[in-house]
Image 1 (tube, one colour):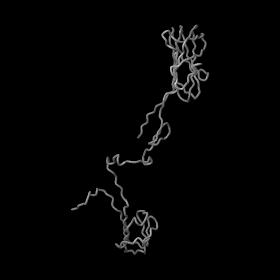
Image 2 (cartoon, one colour; image 1 turned 135 degrees about the vertical axis):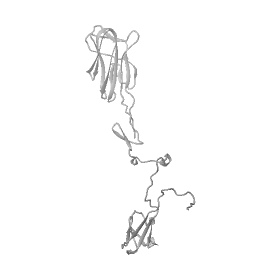
Image 3 (cartoon, helix red, strand yellow; image 1 turned 60 degrees about the horizontal axis):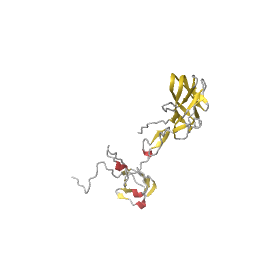
Image 4 (cartoon, helix red, strand yellow; image 1 turned 90 degrees about the vertical axis):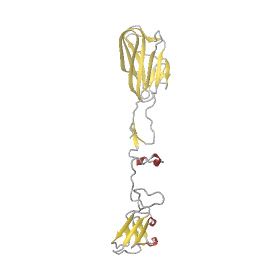
Length: 273
């Protein structure tokens, strides 16, 4: 029957390592575990503890003795506080308190994630997404005549809002403040009957898109597009009407000819494992 003073030892505790050497005729012993000083071991020869002053730590894994051993000698070495076994914690036994402090990313199987093609270490920061700027909405007040079958530049001389001052209200030109993909939309209110109205989108003074609206009667024509633009690319809106004596501008109930748009932001959802 066993009894303990204090808390009984736990199952699976680590014991001090021991080494036994026989049949050696050398004046040294090679250690199973590296040590930093003779204070880490106790050496016995034939059950007699050896004085450390008679021993020499030749290397971290070899001790030179005071004399040669004979084949019948028994040398024993006890490693003081040398851990020679590991214990695996049971599932669910490691708590948050046991993880107090910093854990190096190098100790983690997956220490980083990839955002927009670049690795970001856990604990680091990265910006994903953003705001849809530039963001603008301009309009035209008054009425402006359009000659039949003539391409006419549309003016936008006022603004509801303009986050980056990208719409020039003196000539109606939108200028991209940065590289990116932009959504642009224009609505023209025609004051006379028409059979075909064509809204034309010009980039850097070159027509790149034709948005056609066929119909009869007066009213709104509109078109939208998505464009890849570089910094300082500029966009103008033109109109061409088949009918004579056409004009664009404001309607009797206050609806205005408009030009609006914003930079598109691509949102990505990342899963961190």
